[in-house]
Image (cartoon, rainbow, N blue to C red; front, side, top):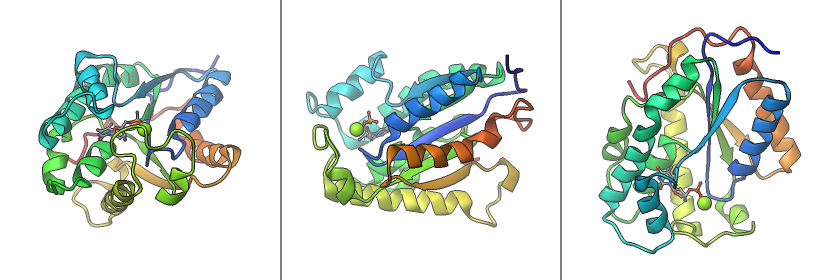
Length: 227
Ligand code: NYM
Ligand code: MG
């Protein structure tokens, strides 16, 4: 049995639609579980809660909502799980999370309505911050060729191209030197070329994750987003 760390690591996987997040999250989960490393999986949007059902209906174009309203629902959907996330981490269990607040900003800020980036960021301020962001980078052109693309809202090449630009901006801001946050309390943003085979991407992900899931655990407190 692996010993319980002081607190678990919060690992978020981000990327365009069809970048392979769900596949890689499943692979990572299996890797951790096979080593008896305690881990829990979350996925946003969590379509099961009442708010999540509204989001699901919107994404499948069964309902229409103002761009601000759907943005706030996505954020609320994270806030409904924020306390659980914290408890899980504090109990020494790691979390692997398929999408988080970065998706919220990237997709809303990419809409034709041109909602300002800062407005998009506001509702998620002070959510539990991830320790590691694994950004699966893929060209919208390549993503389009993968199966299942185009079934939901936002799954068009033009939109995905803008989403990729916003992700780039967030990566730069997260990694920027001279931000007023302590560098050691800043989430680590890793960009992974997701255009390769499932195995190759999985191997690279593991190289980045391994240091975060050592038995010694993580000693720094859980961070807060953008604070
Ligand atoms: N999405 C996801 C948002 O627009 N805002 C958010 O806050 C989150 C978490 O929902 N195209 C978008 C990104 C996806 C869509 O996600 C559904 P998935 O991972 O395909 O189920
Ligand atoms: Mg999708």
